Structure formats: structure tokens, C-alpha cells
Length: 434
Image (cartoon, rainbow, N blue to C red; front, side):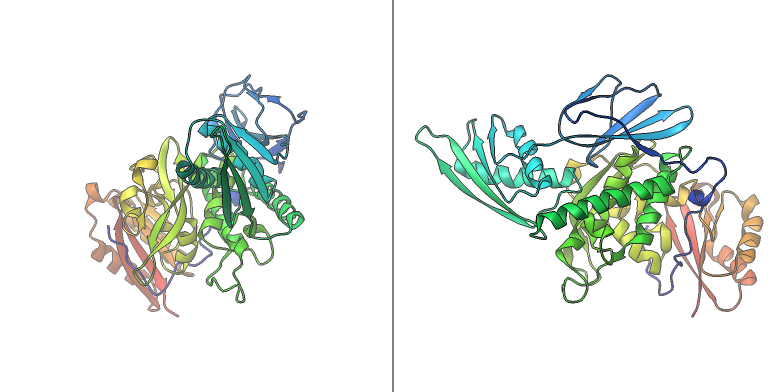
């Protein structure tokens, strides 16, 4: 199951073709805004099921008749006989400079409100039993939780000043620092990001798509739009905005891992495909452990890892088949995370080599009876790099060297073949030498 690195790579032209199909449905927006008084909204739908996301947070099942009162921009994904539709509505927030917290969980709403309104200072009064030592830990924990939950929120750092009155009540004056200090600019970037994501959804997602098809359409759309920022030196191309979702929609659209992960998370939850953020560490090219962020997605009831940052970079090595819909065991080779905090990813069905998604320059062979036709297909597609996938290795015991020899017979002399076993499949990459 070890991963091999190759000099040549699968070309960016190996794009999912499913979203390019037209004609089955008229080009209409998947997302529609519904009237809301800004104070509350009662969800009504008649479809089979619906999922609700607040500000791009994890999409969760919701029942018709649910009343929504918490501030935020909501996305209601309804599954009907005619396919998926997404309704959006907004509950307005109020800026408050002073919050009273009667239990620890209330802190999340206070922090969320401050960050989404780009407040630079807030006073939080703790009206439950706690201590000065605990408050510092509690603030740090909940700021991290809120920014992991709501992907559009951004913060560079914060500091607080604690005080205690004669009755023992604790207060904290918390000051926030954002990637940019001009609030109007940050709000403009928010608007650009929301508009950009809505455009991606309306352009790439069709009502008839399955969740794994939606995933591939939006993932490819994201990777085609952004560029990985290779340097932390702002004088080259990276800025503090490369760590944000908004960075994917402004300027040169250069982002790093948390920018990728938060953008993908928001896009998927907008359309009812539950996706959360994982923060942990990864092993870089020098073998050193560095902080990293990626996603855990729920496809057809099962969980898979998606590292869109590495997937985008690995177009230069193994193309689409690295770091998209991976199991825990595969990711654990070079990623480290607190496994107790996330569902297990152990299912094979929608790991990418087994996925029913159609990809150009990729040929899948399910049995020996299909091999000859598969080889002929490779021969006819001999225009660039590609992949031949031999499925069900445990059943058919493919001789990968023999199959590689058959490929060499139909490929011209400029090609090299490499193989890897992954998820009960033999992956044979045929790569054109420069």
C-alpha cells in the first residue's frame, strides 16, 4: 500500500467529464434565495430529505417545520423527485461589544458573532463558576472550535486581559487581529467569496448529480481556480490571506492548505454533502512534520479523507488518484490527526480508484474478460498520460508486470509504465517521457 513518487505526471487534462454534460437539464441556478424577515425562518419542504448548513458548517439533517433563529447565512439542500435544489436565507446578526456567558457552550456564539463582524475588541463576562487559569484555556479552545466549524471566519491572533470584581465574577477583554486591518476590505472579500462559491455551485452542479459526482465537480473546479502558494515570503506571492477561504477568490487566488480545506468544506456543505475540517500534521518533502489541514467528507453514508492541497500538487505525479477519498490507513502514512475526534474512514466503495466517476484518460478493468478491450482503449487514447486500473485484485490476482508488457506493445516508445496497489486495485500509470 506504499505510495510511489514518479517524475512524470498525470496531466491536468484528466478532468472529470461528468459536469461537462449538457442537454439533460436546462441551465438554471441550483441555488435560490428565499424571503426571510431576518429574525427567524421556519423551514418548509416536501422532499424526501433535507440537510442544513449554517455559514458553510457541517451539513446536518433537518425536518420540515424547524424554526431557525440563530444569525447566519443558511443553505437548505432539499432532495426531491426532480433532484437537488438549494434554498438560501439569512438571519441578521447584531454587533455586541459586551457578552454575558452563563455556561461555557454560550461562548461559541459570542466568538462567532465577533469574528464574522470583524470586531477588534469585545468584553466577555463569565457568569458561571470558573477560574482565571481556566478562562485562558477555554478561550483558546473555543476560538479554535469556532474557526474550524465556520470556514469563512478568519483570525490571525488574539490577546486578552482578565479581571475579577469584588464578588469573584470574571471578565475578559479580548482583542482580535485579522489578516487585514481594514474592515471594509475584509467585508468586500467576504462578498466576493460568497458570490464566487455560489457561481461555482450554479455552474458545476446539476440537480441529477449524486453526492460523489458533486464532490468531483466542485473539487476539480476548486483546483482549476486556485494556485498553491509555495512561499511564505509575502514579497514573493504569499500573504496572510492565503490561509483563508477568501484568498481563493481574490487577486491571484493563491492559497495554502487551510485555504484549500476551508473552501472545499464550505462548497460541499452548501450543497448538502457533509464535510468537516481536520487539523493535524503532515510529513513534508524533507521528512519533517508540519501543521496541515484537510477534510473528512461523508459520501453515501461513509467517510473519506480529501486533501485537496496535496491532490492539486500531485497532478504533477500521480494525478487524481492521490489524496481524494482516502481511508484512514492510507492517510496515516504521512498525515497525523487526533483520530478520537473524527469518524473512522474505512470504507472502500468511493475511494477514488473504485468510484463510478468517469475520468478522461482513465480506463477501468473489472475482470480479465475486459482486459483486451481496456488495452485497446488505452491504445486509442494515446495522446498523453493516463491510468489503467485493474479492479478486484483479491479476486483476480492481476499480474501487473504482464499487463504492463501488454501496454508497452500498444504504446509508443516515449512512454514509461509504473504501478501501485491501492484499495484492492492495481494502478498502472503510463507516462509520456518529455
